[in-house]
Each structure stands twice: as structure tokens, then as C-alpha cells.
Length: 331
Image (cartoon, helix red, strand yellow):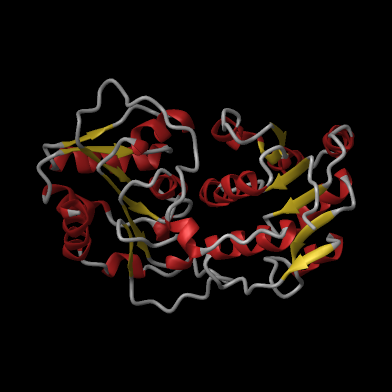
């Protein structure tokens, strides 16, 4: 007998790429439980990506970064009060598996599903969950997300269903400045050793005749994008884009090339071609398809203990990326 879920909550606080990859669960929940309302809890900086999502009922935000930065007990008490006013849920699913996300879930209610002690990113998080899923942390992130909701809601999502998924996020109108065909190059990442060298990105960009847009989020990334623009006549720096504008650019692109960072993963979310360049991380962080490919360095990656001193991404040949891109574009 199928359980009735009138109202559930999903917790995935951050980061951008992880939130994007977590949204894959929404359409499969709705396919089995079309009348179920789904709320999402995340850090407030990521709310704009989710607030207009057609399958999300309500987005609730937290600002743990501000609380941590200010070391403010007053702000934490205020957050607790806010969380206690949230609706009563039939089930809360913690997709993050961290102590902070599990505490937030427990403040809201007791009926929580999450990862087991040996599957969570932080084992201590599991003590707050009523039911658990067991899947190694080293397994592919999409496989982990799907296992979690399959167990939590008695779903039967298959690989074939993932391969034929609908776009995960809202489709936006193509930017006015963009031509019919163009490539997006994501120049930045969360830390330096995940960033492919700008000099080698110049070589990659020069291999294509179509328009190339260089996205950036920080002043350092803008400087790198400026270097590429100066050395490649068909490459142009974008204006500073918010999340929705960035989504609009990528969801109409012919190809996105970038580091292991949230904007690059938007391409897979929109069923658009992409190449993700990995150094200290690996393809565990994405879902590979015929048009979404990983280019990895030869380093041995321990995904549970990322080595931020690993500079192996520098050793990847531009020609390797170009060859992969040409194969995708032929398709």
C-alpha cells in the first residue's frame, strides 16, 4: 500500500552544484505523488534558483554563514524560532548529510530520512534521522540522491528515467545579446586548484569559430576571463550575471566547458552538452551522458578528503578538451 504524503520538505542547503544535482529528485517525486507539496530549505543565497521552480511549493531560507561569521547566539535563536513556525511535514528528507543540516531538520520535526552513519558526509548527522539510506559517500552524487528518495518515498527511479529526465530547472528566455549558436566557458571555481589554467583555456577557445561567452563570479575570475578575451578574438566576457541570468545563458548554449563548479553543472540540468574539467575532484560529482563528459587528470582522488594542494588539473592537455568538444558538437 502506497503511503500518502501531503506535504514533505527537502533540505539541501548548499553549494550551487550540489543543489542543482539534488533537484533531479523533484520530477520523480511528483510522478508518483502528483498532489504532494514539496518545500525546499536552503541557504538564502541560492533561493533565487529555486523560488520559481514549478515543482516546489515554497522555499525557506537559512543564513548559517552569517550566524557563523558573527558568532551570534541571537541570530541562532531567531533561526530556531523561524524553523519552528514551518508547516508540519509528513516527512523531511535531508539530502546534505551534514551535522548542520540534520540539526535544522530536527528543529523542524522528528520524522526525518537521511543517510546512514557510514553513508553521510558527517557520520554524526545520522543520529538525528528516523530512517536511513545506505550508499557509500564515494558513489556518484546523482546515484546517491536517487537512492535516498527511492528509500524515503518507496520510489523506483531507474537509470533509464534519469537518462530521459526533463530539464531540472525553469527554462528562461535566451539573452538578447546571444546569437543562435554559442559556447559558454566557466572560468572560475570554489578554490584555485579546481581552476583550469587561463593560458590553456585560450588554446581551447581558439579551436572554435563560434561565439564564446566567458562567465565569472569574482574579481579574480573576471581578471582571468579578461586575459582569455584579450587573446581570443571570438571570446567575450559576460556582464556580472545573477543565477537566473546565468541559467538563461547556459540553457540555450551549444556547449558549456568549465571546471567542477555549479555553473558548469547547469548544462546537465538543462540537458545541454557540457565538458567538466576535473583535477582534485572527479566524475563522481557529475552524471555522465553522451553529451555530458568528464575530462580528468591522472591524480588519484579521495573524494571524502579533497586535496586542495593537488594541482594536477594543470597537466590536462587543451587538445584533450578540444577533441571531446568536437565529438559532442558533431552529435
